Picture (spheres, rainbow, N blue to C red):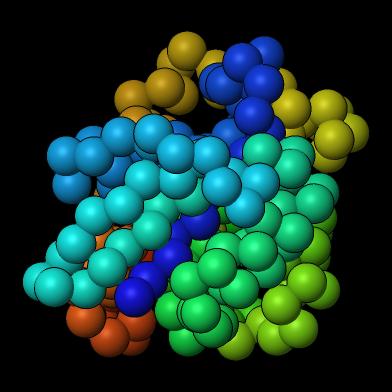
Amino acid sequence: MKIIVGLGNPEEKYLKTFHNIGYIAVGDIAAKLGVKFKKKECEAFTAEANIGGEKIIMARPVTYMNNSGRAVKQLFAKYKASAQDLIVIYDDYDISKGGLRIRPSGSAGTHNGMRSVIDEIGTQSFTRIRIGIRDNAVSIPLINYVLSEVKKEDYDLFVYVCERAADAAIAIAGGAPVEKAMTDYNLNVKD
């Protein structure tokens, strides 16, 4: 069993914002696996698929970003899962736009949604797929930046990176070691 959570905010006004990059990427996973988010459970919209006989739950929490951990904790309880079963995909301001970093563990950095997940499940030891969003040419407060819409000229870049993140999550859920996924899918961008 794997639970793949894309962090974001549920309202339509947030749909195309940087903070919804995780929602977009987990939507790409569902599309690649031919499933839809049909169910609402554990304060999340979920979709279910199988990869090589492994049950995969994809989730988009509806708790809003800063309380994402509540949904993850509830999903753990319902599906009798643990941190080793978890993959979280999210936007990361600490990485330049277009970057992709997969890690087997780590801190929340500047991300309140990840801080919530770590606080609720009590560990940092779970796989995360971080999609870089920082644009050094933009200087506005972080909260305003993450809630702003992706610029039209950057749309294709983020479509590509979200699809690559989806492919990485599918590979990991299918049994690829995280270290192999890091080698195969990480994208480093120079500032």
